[in-house]
Length: 262
Image (cartoon, rainbow, N blue to C red; front, side, top):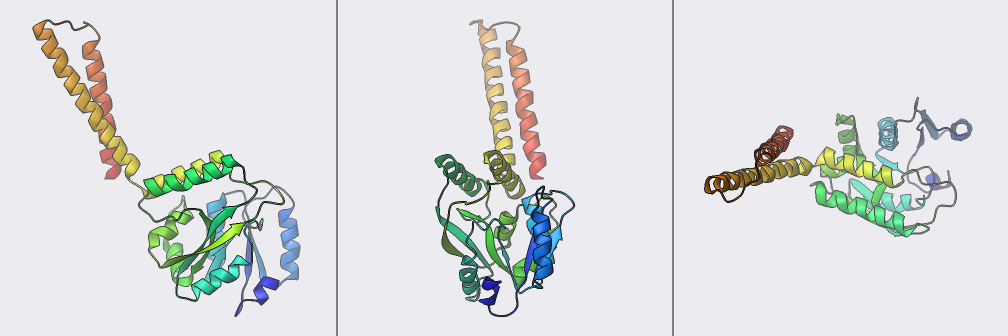
């Protein structure tokens, strides 16, 4: 409420309960009942972070929407900086972490690996060290709502739109309560989902790998035939089997890539 009072115009806060198993929803219900500017969306079960974000953005009615996690590890006062940058004419303003306190070296390493993997494997501009904490203007929000994707990677969707974007750097303090809901395996699953949603490179890799295996199989087959003709010592029995199996594997991979690209 104190933060809302510092903003120009009217504002609302929409909480999305993604099938929580603790007492969070009961506490949120009391907050919403006491504060007219608060709203609550209760999902019937846990659908995941990206769907929860989508549900909140579908319900938002403002000229700009700010997405942030409810654990408040991202400082709420950064919202004022996001709004100020939006007023300069940027349609999407994301908060970039320049410092991550209270995280282990393994967490920092996996986070760095996550962003660099996305950067190399996807043609979409997904900024480094940026989560879902961002401001989205009305034009970008309306575009987001019209996108039909069922399995959503929200960061990639906003990057794909091509609207004018800007970054607001901030220092992320250490977590005081609870534990992160994004362990290593979940982060890698999100990265893989982002890659297969916005990149053709895995299919291109399958195509090129299949082409290379097929070429090597043909070369080895030609060598085996020549060695048999010249009687220079080809092991009988398995050579033809290896060549045929390798060639079929290569053709299968190649055609998988072709079908996927089509």
